[in-house]
Length: 302
Image (tube, rainbow, N blue to C red; front, side, top):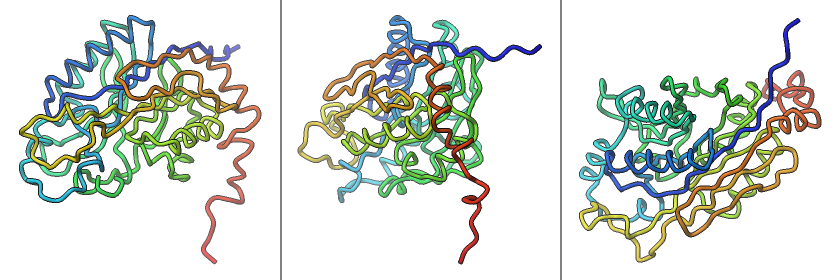
């Protein structure tokens, strides 16, 4: 008789940090050091912010006029990542060394077709690239920098740590995108973001309840001081462009069990007992007994 799958307790780490702006090598080295630090705290899954390699085009500055768009684009391209590629190989080597799985936000480029960049979430394990997801719908100013994802990567990845799924930043507000991922029965939901608002905290708590999964939310803490004098775009007077708010949220209750961390770089760690995801879906399974897809999807136009 086939035995039921085990439901482990997984220690997750949300790494809230700022990259070395537009410097891929330095940002990668920083991320690998932080990965090792998180592993030293017992983390098995280490999650980094949206486009941590190597810059998030924040509305705090990207909407301002007067910048050198060509210079910024060229440097953004140069500090972006191919997936698969050598950067992914180095992350995988670190995952092997520390026996972890890593979720990393990157600006992704296609070396064989220099052109558009994509806001991409990579999932990397000791054996290499497990999955990648390109953001479906760049938000507002992001459309000047990122192409649109195709949606064929809205899925859950089965790992030794459980079923990992999720979306990037405001994709998490898209009901049908969430629904697509819910079909895979996620147990841990990855939510890298640039949103430091109270509304975002409400969003991730709702998703934990709706998905029946633990949510790992990871924004950047973005300081003006981290931008060099040669940055080719004007910057506002504010000293902080993103306060952070890294947090881990439990399923069913939507309780914040670690964080939120504001106004500093740091690592938020929590133990996630995946049995709780099974219990949560007993009460409310959005893609199962509570879906009613038979009457709600698809709906014909009136």
